[in-house]
Length: 453
Ligand code: DGY
Image 1: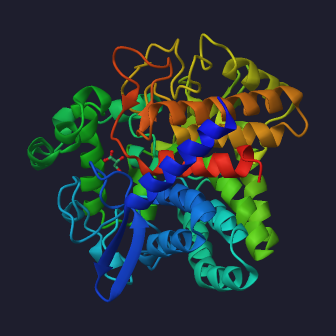
Image 2 (image 1 turned 180 degrees about the vertical axis):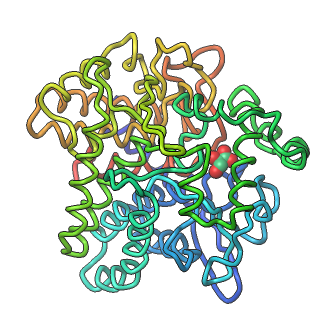
């Protein structure tokens, strides 16, 4: 496709992203940010917002600053920033603010989910800062860096009791890849029969994604009971994160989450000139290396619940994400690139499916069990181009993936995610429409790597 077509799509992306910006009043604070999609996701989501800011940085850096300012406004006193920050004037989305017993933790009286999401904040801050003039940049960094530092300190202090260099996540929603097959085995240890009736009834009565959206695109009902059971359990534990990490049936070292963590520490080291974050990044890289399975040629998530250390071997896109933080070279890199470029596994018409095409768990339409997502493609494009400085093969794949991702979004519009096999009878538009991060990541990729200026 031509540069002209991408440029026209960038104009459409700008209009979608801008039209999703809302102004929210919480107490005496007025916050501005883009909601992910007006059809369903009407609050502020953590990793979505980090991506929105990366796109907005190119078309309105002040809007990008507002987006991140709003994101950190609900930060807890212990440094945690929630996966969802709630707009008190919106009631349609479930789980509602009342589902989280967390109101007491934010200094600003803002209700946020008690769980985290892949820690892209420092990466986003670095990119936004790069688009500001010197005066704006200094002011922005002086305002936001204390929050970013305290967020990293929170993660480091509470999420790695084994001192493995890798953080533990405590809920499938923390991974951002809610129903990835990677979580099946751990979730199966929670029997739906043991989920309290009040949780089951609450989900049956209030779950709204399958009403607003299509059941075939969304996580199945048993998994949704388990998601809300974990929220219930953590409410009961009063969000005492050390106890949760030590005792939860769901505690996993997620490869994608940790690749983001390492990559974010690289950004924070540059932003603060503090070498400690480079050390944390290096410890994370060493931790990632320990999960490499040479026979299967993959990095593996690790189930660490209740003192276990059990690798998870599902074939998913997460195995490639260490490319983003320079954690693959030599034979490891060769093994990864061979799997990534295999058309039978990860390289169909619209790469990269979130679950391998030849996995028994692959599902063409269901959220993170197959479809191609702009966020995971962005991580791989950046990882491949970075690795491409020393590997011609990675550089070629990175450029191909950049072009196919821009084409995919320009062709099919700004939906939540895309069909890896291209268009078909089932339609290429998946999930919810007018999706902010698909628009924002299009702008980020186009302006950072594809436009001539
Ligand atoms: C959802 O509702 O699908 C979200 O991923 C939960 O944060």
